[in-house]
Image 1 (cartoon, helix red, strand yellow):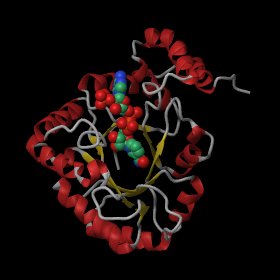
Image 2: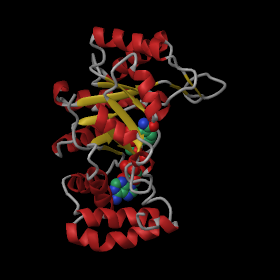
Image 3: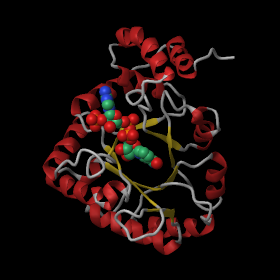
Image 4: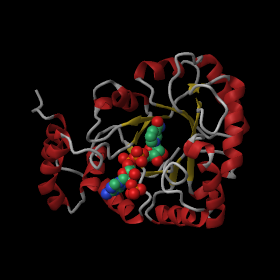
Length: 286
Ligand SMILES: NC(=O)c1ccc[n+]([C@@H]2O[C@H](COP(=O)([O-])OP(=O)(O)OC[C@H]3O[C@@H](n4cnc5c(N)ncnc54)[C@H](OP(=O)(O)O)[C@@H]3O)[C@@H](O)[C@H]2O)c1
């Protein structure tokens, strides 16, 4: 499966964020594709189960060819908002997975998604049963590939006994670097799994803590050197990792998207990358 070097995340396009109307969403889709960002990340839950529907209408309005873009969606989280449940929980039985994909396809107005991901690991998931559901979906042509999200390496291994895993979408940014050390990115390299990084800007625009202060300071000369914004530099940091990380970016702003796209094509010098790592960690490498 081929994805664009940056993936457009739709989590805040609808009710969970900017509440874009269908026309505005169509414009965002067109702008993304004009930058070569052809892959779109969804989940059934976004907008309390409403954003896929709006995006489906917007994509139709754009008149774009379905085969020129890739849709990723996720299943498995049962929310209390938008559904009548007492408690938020995870569900991964055979019938539930098939039903969830059917709903996503209807909402997105498409006959297939390019990738289906399990949104989060559940202590109660049964890999063999999930494998059967994936086999059925692949056979029906409703999904082109299968993957997971927020899975640790041993959870990926357990699942891979029953079905191939092509993607692991995990939290990774200049302020959240755990996946470089917990085996996730090593496994991606070794097993040819595509690592997608959600929240790729991490906390850089969120909190004024010691870490972000250090990063902002260290980034100043580097932003100048590479002609990048802090956001663009943060994307370049992720792109340097040899596992071939695909950042899933959440901005709804076209100019910001252009900055991030620029960062994706910049190859940071080795020492510059370590300057940023040192600023992130607040200590020298051992
Ligand atoms: N698999 C999972 O469990 C999981 C979890 C969370 C998210 N995701 C996926 O990851 C995607 C991205 O997540 P995210 O939105 O948290 O990631 P992000 O790209 O790290 O953050 C984007 C946020 O930063 C803001 N921002 C402020 N200044 C910016 C600048 N200069 N450039 C770019 N953005 C700037 C954006 O607001 P504006 O819109 O105003 O620019 C937006 O709210 C989601 O849409 C979703 O598809 C997956």
